[in-house]
Length: 475
Image 1 (cartoon, rainbow, N blue to C red):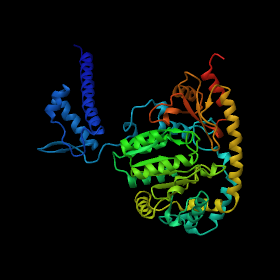
Image 2 (cartoon, one colour; image 1 turned 60 degrees about the horizontal axis):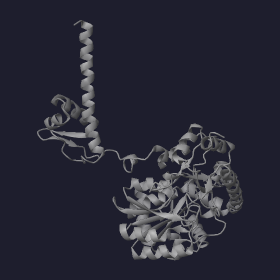
Image 3 (cartoon, rainbow, N blue to C red; image 1 turned 30 degrees about the horizontal axis):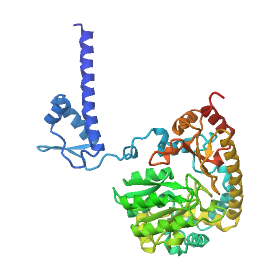
Image 4 (cartoon, one colour; image 1 turned 90 degrees about the vertical axis):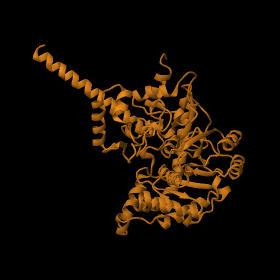
């Protein structure tokens, strides 16, 4: 054998050795990530693992030493190797069923958030920046900047700005919800409010009930809290009551998360009869309800609120101004019974310390100067027109709305027969159009042919051109 051939053979042997070491390391990492090996657990002995994986003892020794260097495992001389007490990073992708990425809620959110500003995003859940009250925000920024310097630099109080909580209390009274300002805690968003409530009320493995379909981030958030999720079909007037009764009796969920105002994604409104029956079953089965009401200001007339009927006994009510005012200067709130607010305040301090004082002051300024009311009047009219236009153009392509919503920004639509929403979304993404296929909203994966359209983001001609090309390629 020549020197060159000998060198190549040695290199090949080293490559095979590295591959075997990587195999052992990946095996141990997977067992830790899958919780087959928990923090503090003893790893298989070097000889046993070598025999199991059919590699040499020296290969396992090298793999273990590298894992020790990474901090994944610990070496205890004379005793063996143990999983480090720091658990492997938790990933949401591992927490639920392996869904096609086209119908993964995190995928939809990332595509929408990372899309180039000029690209159409009919699948996103917010208004275009030009539809929001930019001049009111600029005016509020100027006012706040000239005020108390502490507003620009200091922490807010744990409950949040008192004047804004008092204003929110009065606004909630317009929806029939009587709540004192001290029962309201400001948050940075509706999502943070739900996250804090889940931290407060849930333990890993608890069961939570959601609508089917529902806002897709509920699924992701609940998986992050390691909850067991069950669902109930949603109808044009609320959850299917017979199915609701069967699910709560069988699974005894700890929480039910829903929209009782404008439902996301369907645009439906809860009826008074359905609301009363839901609350009766909540009392019977000791069920707590999170009422997500972030679309309240889009309504032309207030729909029934569970919190109004319940008096904030079993219902926790949350809201936000991110959809109507600014997604950049975010401000939300949670209203609940006094003893729960105390616990939520402690959690808020533990997880985010002080509140966002500057955004609270901005929100208060815009809500107080009269411009917000005028902005919302114009916005509701603009959305109603966009709803009619989008519905007409979508129907011309064979895309049929499930209902004609009374208000809001969403159309929940069924695609033409045989069309798969996930495939349509992938094809549209190649043309820089972000869509929201139905199964991202459906725990039961029964919305294969459905899609949610945000009418404020749908009117771009490019959206309809892409949909026509994907759905009717022969035309």
